[in-house]
Image (cartoon, rainbow, N blue to C red; front, side, top):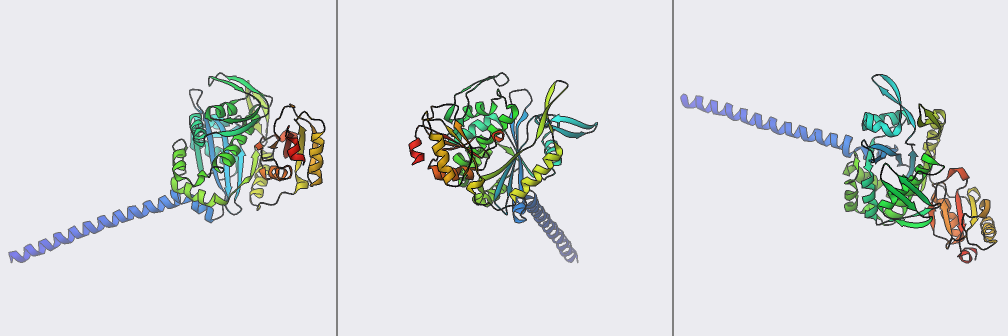
Length: 404
């Protein structure tokens, strides 16, 4: 009898042990399933989810200025990829743009550049989402040191400087002295290029130079060297960027953007007017105009890339060779091929050794169409909306090559 009781007691203990082990396994399995679900849908699967649903994927990129005690968002850019059309877009937000920030004490008006420091990244993303009426799931921040290291990893990038740049940046302790012309620049020189602010275009000029640099890095650095397929390089870049884009998200995006139209990037800049409030300079946004521009921007991203029609490309031809009549001859050649040459005349210098083509609109396909006719492959982004042309041709001393 005692032996029977002992056996029953042992069976109950074994049953309890099996139950505990089984429940433990089930709990562990449940935790694993929850982790996989969260990781896929909220971390690793977000990019895939956007792509599969054909929704535009947006990322807020902030270039941080660490020249002062508190880091400010010196560069504010929203990059957008539209999976169905493979189109890319960029929205530039001026650092001095005055935005509405909800606080416990009501709505405050703040410069875009200081929202990060005063309210944090989460609040800054929300403010920009509300202002543009769009979803921005991703964000990335990088300081100047990170930019220098990434440019140095690429080796160098080539830029065209149309005017000498001399300026002393007291806050960063930089002496900027960049001569006019075509230059291959390293990370430190790039920092000087984008920090320069001593010209008549002010903050707008800085935004355009940042865009020029981005186009150069994408087209001549990243795509030109085919490093988007180099996983080791991508991991190295991620060391210098603080982002909520994890590695799985990044791979999903890179796979889908392998056929993206990097040569036809749509670009807009948030409009506004310069104002001064209590001695502080701001750019006051035009909210109605902004709303229309953003709507048109997304409509354009939803269009499949089309062929550039020469008659719709506005071209400016300038003579920088020192030889009389070559701008007219270049104009005539382009007109015979159907291009709309809206202006021709003299360049700021008559000492250009080589003919160059400047992309004024951010749509490099237009410049490439001109390039094919003139058989000139020296194309440089030099954004300038004020001159109202798509492409500028500066004829150099090699004019015989492009006129034959």
